[in-house]
Structures are given as structure tokens and as C-alpha cells.
Length: 620
Image (cartoon, rainbow, N blue to C red; front, top):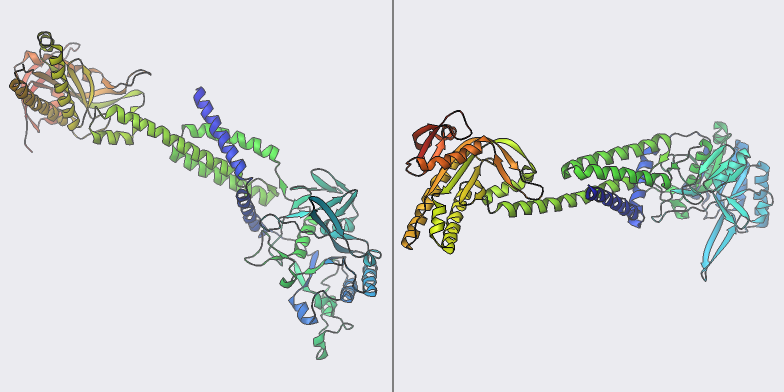
């Protein structure tokens, strides 16, 4: 039992450790990311959001309308802010960096336009560089001319994973004693003026807790594919009667008034950012549609929408997940120790599919994220471990069977036995067999009157021939009892008409002995003769030895009667020295030539049994 417990624990710990280490590698991490991307992408198909947030896109249409290169003049941005105020925008958020001076008057005017609106958030960044093995951190806020009038700004740093995908969003950065908030979080704080508390596990804003995924970052719960939020072209918002587009030399457009009439921006939170490919502010995300990337401004919009909805993905802590996983794997290890590989495979698939369904359900319905592939990998590794383990055990078992039976059974029967080694497990079962006993007549007297070497030599020659004959007739040598031979037919592998095969074997044994007798006489040696008894019936057959010694044999009245028939053979004058019982005759009477001998009551029996001598096998 101790060995079994140790085996179970070793396999569980090995599967647990291998899987854990595997998902710390870049390849394992990549697989986990892709599984997460698939879940999030499917989840986003069921998402819905309010129309609180809209995006003003610096897109290809804007470049086509202005017929200028980037960056746009800051006069355009000031005009945009004033137009958005006229349109009723609740808050304006720039995902555009104004970290360098343009023209003093334009810079100041943009700051004034923001101050006039009263709720404008600008963009800034933090840069970190290694210089001579020393990490330097630099803040790059909007220029002072803007901040003097409108001081609110947030970070637009966009952290990405090793594969370049943006799955997380930084909430803040600390530099010495100062804390800088991200663009989306700054927007939320400006909107609601709630107090903020930063802890080791989350950020509290009012009554809302924003959980970290790693460090100070939160998983982005994307609401949909790129352009899921309502987009408006930058040029359409600035195009009022006071702003003349190049093409308006020929006809008036003035899209601004259509927006004013439709109240498209009334009480909306408005993000302004680049979406055109050439501005290189587009990113790979889990919800990208084929090759379409998501603009950075829309990633910020997703994060703000999460804050507005209190809609965060909560990860199960590793300190909870891994201990529970280890317990599960230990239980599975106990289970798999007793299962065959095919059953283990079926259960592995059931466990894995159930876990993946549970993981997706919790993610879809409750925003709870479990490690997706870690536990399935543990189950897979433990299945493979036990597959190899059972294969090795089975190979050893088959080798032991082959070594044990190759001297007692025909190779074809050994091959069949290897397919069903469970037939040899300790214990017996009731089954129909034919048993054959043969014995050398007067062997005790022979051994006393002949030398040891001659006796042993003849016995070896005789027994070798008899065993070969038994194996050639699909029988199994049960044992040698001194000079006697016991053979069984129809076990451990079933054969057709085992009683007939036993009779054929007896005739072949007699014929083989005749050849040996002729050989011995030609050598000047004394020939020996044998008697054979055959019986058919039910017996308890199986591995009936001790725990130390394997002994595949049969016991019961059928076996005892076969031995008695061989013993009384010497009392009758038979042609071939072969006596069969009425039970064997019933199976083979149409296939042999036979002759009634007697009705006898053998030792241990009260009911007489009819016995017959086997004369010949009929030609087919």
C-alpha cells in the first residue's frame, strides 16, 4: 500500500510541477494568452454598452478634408474644443500629446479653450530608459502654456505583452512622491470627484474597487471589436461656417450643424485620437477582427467604460488556485492509478471539457478569470504519465507471462494470452476444461534397475517429446508430478472442441512414444510404456498459487476423475493405453473410434462412471 501511495503522490506532484513550470515559459504563456483571447473575443460578442462615450477620429477622411500633414495646427484643436462645448459635450479627452511648443499664441488659446469648457483632459507620458545600468524615469506632460489654463492630464502609456498584444491597462505610475493617473482613470476622477485610495491589491475610487491583474495594471474587459464605439471624423466636428475646408471653395459642407441638430455629442464623454494607420497609434488586441487593429484612443475608451460600469475582470489568486489544483490532481492521480489507459483518456476529456466550460461560464457571467490551460495541462500530463506507467507495467507483465508460459503452451496460445493478461490474476473461476493425465508404467522399478544418468536422460527425452505434443495440440502443460504429466485444454485461452484436442493429443503422445521406444530398443535400452486418462467437465481454474509462487492449475472433481482414470488404466488391457470418461465421449463420439470398457466407482465417488478406451481418431 505504501508503494501505491508513493506512486500516486509522485505522479500528482510531477504533473503539477511540469504544468506550472511549462506555463512560466514564453511558449506556455503564449498559449494561455491565446486561450484568453479566444474567450474574451467570444465574450465581447455578447457585450452591450451605453452611448455615453463617443470618439472623434483623426482618420483618413480628416486628412483628405484638410489636405495637410500631421500634426494638425493647434488652432484646429482649440476650434474643436469650442465646437464641442457648443455641441454639449460633458467631457473632452485628448489622446494627443502636446508636449512641445507650437506657437505661443496657439498654445495659450488651446489652454483657454479647454478652460472655457471646464472639463478637458490632456495626454502625457512617462518614459523609462536604462542608461549605464541606471533606470531613469522622465515625465512628459502637456506644455505649461496649456497646463496653466487647464491642468488636468493623464498618462497614455500603452503597456503590451511580449507578443505585442494590449491586454492590460496601467492605472497609475508613481515617481518618488508623485502619483500620475492614466487617461481613463483621470477622466473618471474628474467626472465624479470621488476620493481615491491605492492599495497593494486594488485601487478604490469611492465605493468602487478596481482589482489589479499584475502590478498596477488591470485586465481590459473589451466591449467589442475595433470601432465598437461610435466614431465621428475630426473634420466633421470642426467644419462650421467659420472654418473653411479646402474643398469648400466650390461648395459649402458644414457638417458641424448636422451634429448640432442631431445632438450627437450632447452630454457625451468625447475622446479625440488618431485612427489613421500612418499615425501608428493602432494596436493588436484580443478582439481584433482579422487584420484590423484597434486605435489607442478606443482602448482608453474601453477602460473608461469599464470604470463607468464597474465592469472588471477579477482573477482568482494563485494562492487559492494552485493549492486547490494540487488537491484535484492528487484525487485524479488516485483515480487514474486503478484505471486502464482508455478509461483514463475518456475521463481526462470529460474533466478537461468540464473545466473549460466552467472557466468560460465564470468569465462570461461573472467576470471571474481562472487560469485557462493550467489545470487541463496538469490533467493531460498526469494522463500521459500513467499511460507510460501502465505501458511499462503491462510490458513487464507480458514479459513475465511469456517467460512463464512459453515452455508450457503453444506460441499461438501464448500470443493470445498476452492480449488478455487479466486471465492470470490471482484467483480462479469455474469453467469447462478437458484434463489429461499420463504416467510411465513401472517407473519406480525402472529407476531402481537402471543407472541415474540413463534414467534421467530417458526421462528428459520422454518428457520433452510429451510437452511438445501437448503444445502442438493447443494444450497447456499444467505440471510434472514426478514422471507423470498433467495437461489442461481450453484454458487459459478457449479453444474449439477441447475434448477432441485432448484425445488427439493422447494419440499423438502414444505415437511419439512408439518412435522413442524403437529408438531406445535400437540403442539396446529398455523401453517404457505409459497410461493416459482423459476427463471433461467443469473445474476451478486459475492462478491458485501463493503470493510468492505463481501456479496456474485446475482443481475439483473433474481434475480428480482424470487422475483416477490414468491410475486405473493399468487394470485394463487397452490397445493404446488411453481411457476416457463418458463425459469426454459425449463431446467426441462422432470423431473417434472407441470401445466400452466398464462402469466403475472411483475413489471419492459414489456414483459409477462409464469408461471407454480410445482406439483411433476418425479420418475427416
